[in-house]
Amino acid sequence: MKSIGSSVFGFYALFFGFILLSCQSKTEQKEDIAQAKTGSFGDQGDGTYINPILNADYPDSDIEQVGDTYYMITSKQHMSPGMPILKSKDMVNWTNVGHVFDSLSWAPEYNWDRMNGYSFGVWAGDLAYHEGLWYCYQIDYQHGLMVTTAKDIAGPWSKPIFMLPKSEVLDDPAVYWDKDTHKAYVIVNTAGKQKSPDNNIEGNENRIYEMSWDGTKILDEGKLVYTGMGAEAAKIYKIDGTWYIFLAQWTMGDRSTKPGVKNPKNDRKQIVLRSKESIYGPYEVKTVLEKGSVFNHRSASQGALMQAPDKSWWYMHQLIQNDTIPFQGRPQCLEPVNWVDGWPIIGIDEDNDGIGEPVKQHKKPIDGFPISAPSSDDDFSSSTLGFQWEWNHNPRNSHWSLTERSGWLRLRASEVLPNEKGYGPNINEWTNNDGSDSDFWRACNTLSQRIMGITTGTATAKFDISGMQPHQLAGFVRYGGVFNLLGVEVDENGKTHLFYMDGMVKKTKGPEISGNDLYVKTSNNGNQAIYEYSIDGENYSRFGPTFTIAFGKWTGDRLGFFSWNEKKNAGYIDVDWFTYDYDGPKAAK
Image 1 (cartoon, rainbow, N blue to C red):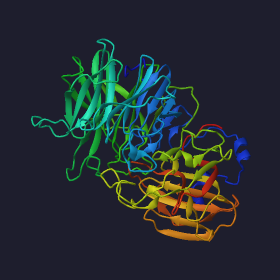
Image 2: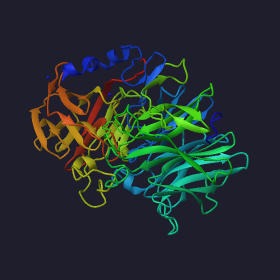
Image 3: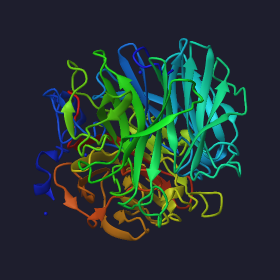
């Protein structure tokens, strides 16, 4: 319930201090007690923060406050588990809680034996807390509006209940329980799916439906409250008796492109509808946030309103992909909110036009809490997978383990899926075409986590390759819109060779690897990245070209592991540890 105030990452010289000490043993790593660090974004350790505070692929946020804690959900499309949950005490430092969806269980295209759900699955959702129960609403573009519930934010969450079919709705639900009238509502972008010929306004329709008080059933046919170009991502608030609906909407300065297509003349702005009469309106409309100068004119909108203990107001939102294409994904920014004549102006009005623009650095909303960040490093000593990791589609659970070899992640190789219709990515407006027919996109049990930041970063992993079998390929992957692999391949004679593969499946064969151990390191400077390898963990050699990391399939660049077999279900690779150093905040360890 959104009742604010009561419940609301020759190259070495370029990386300075970001090259990891990969020669450390796991024990030495555990004993390396470090202080919390800062960087080019997030908490600066001096009472201020630099946007984006979450400079990684955490898009489509919604935030609910319960007590003194703020809880955030963000979308992650076809990744499994789905809908990450984070928490914070100060709106700036966020840590992992878990995921709403343990798996994308409601449709077969998300399973390991199909991998046909790229860019779909979990889209923008709404998180709410009502009468002791957590609710998460989201719309799968291919299946409709659903809700899942939990007594504890960490789960377990219930099986999704479907409330409206895909034929009627597009995306981005938001709910509100009005205690004054004992009525519950959900607003949904229905786009043009129910549009009457009488509605001549260009753009998406947004409708409000009445729900049952338990938040699981739709009670009416809905009522249209607003139509606008690309209008979506609504949030409903009732503040001092006045209704506010926050919406993201496109301003088209150049109609030669669609909303969302790279074009500096177009802007996705945050608008607010305001009514003192009813949730259904009539509504006044005002733009309260637009792109400014600090993010190279990258659009800013879609998020959630929050209030601090001192009654100050704040807004969390994502940066959009309409101009500068975000290879790290869509990050989260925190803005102060100033109320002007009853309107929440977000950020700082840098051009004095009555509309806010994002800030780069600002005083923190709440002092006294330590620097923290989502998890990254892992020694795989737990019997459960860390919350930072997500699978490319639902995993084949019989083919991975944290317990078969204690302290190691084992990834067994499955045969790749057929290059046929119904398997792997479809080409559509949400996916990029390059390399989409390659084996990588149809190989199950690829495990990865987000990169952090856009300056520099270095990730290193240690592998044991002794369990690999002929025709198996395994190792390290970076991927988002494109993939780049560095790993080992076992040929039909049992010989193991290093290889690099780019996103168009061009493979470069490397030296024979005779031992059991392989260390892989990848470093990036901006969107330019390289791979290095070692057999002793001390002496690294570069292999493969400098390559470009990129956003695509609605996903920023990611770091992780792959393992597949071209002929049969055979072989495995073990991962001992993974470390990641980047130019941003990291908690003490």
